[in-house]
Length: 138
Length: 334
Image (cartoon, rainbow over all chains, first blue to last red):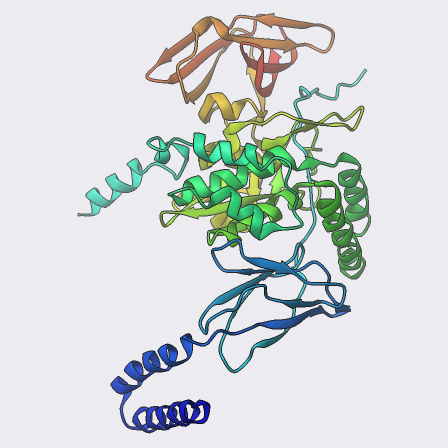
């Protein structure tokens, strides 16, 4: 049963590749066919998040536009709590680092992500309600 | 056609809060207060709670902005430390960069653990949270001018605020100044939310916010120079709650003759009582609250006229009720 499905998918892929070679219009259509073919799969997504110094603890990994998510552990690793479908987007965010959106596809269910720290210049002038006073010569 | 275009340009109002008069922000504000005890350790969750039940981008942004203004405290000691180092390394870009990298870590640690920051922190958090809500938001770096800034020689860029794109138009806001004011004596930050810095009128904003990149004035058809900014009158927080524009005088320091009439001109957001308009005049020895020679309000246009009867050098503070609006100086000669 399983080998048959795999065979079918391989056949479908082969067909898509051929049509893609010959027609641009067909390419657009076949792309939709691939996503539907794999969208039914339930994917368990795992991964590891690091920065230039090593694993990052406490990175938020969230399914876009939802509350479903997980936080990376001390090894920077996570297992997403819910199975995902191809095309879903995971949002990786951590204070001081650039936010990244990662699109899930069936081929890569283990995500190795390097996050880079945000380039922020730190400046700050608080406002003041103290009335201005001119400097006067005595 | 050309005249029609000119007409359109001349009467085009700048992007500001009045574009959203039809929107009631109470639901967004309520979301911000419900999330009061949440921290920044789970930003996606915070953004979800702040925005998921709101219908428009402006409401979603409002909830985020209100949360930041009411939950992030301005750390005055952190500000002073950074100011000292930045001036010290002003001409040494390598040292400045390395200081900035060290300091940045300190700032983010404080933000995560204590919800405390200085203004780039505010602008940064607003931007990050807005991005998580799929809103286009930027940090604008530049110069902020207050009564305490050394206005004769403004140091390197000292302030940051935000620009937010709503319905294909950019708007300005300043979450740092909106959140409150630290007491320079006790260094204790006091939350005192000022709604005037939310989607402010760019014409008022430019008087004490000069962006490093010119396009962030949001007034592409007008030229505004740094020298004009340095020479402008001082505006206080309450100016943003009463005024829509500050038209005249354009200069902080004025010279005039005894009994010469000087005119002040403003556009008000809402009508006010003529009697509430007062000057506090300081001649270096005494302070005196006085009623200007004439105060006129018509179609939300406030026009004040005043004459000085004796020679001297005066600091003139405009008050509406008990609220300090702006400061000018006058050198009066015979």
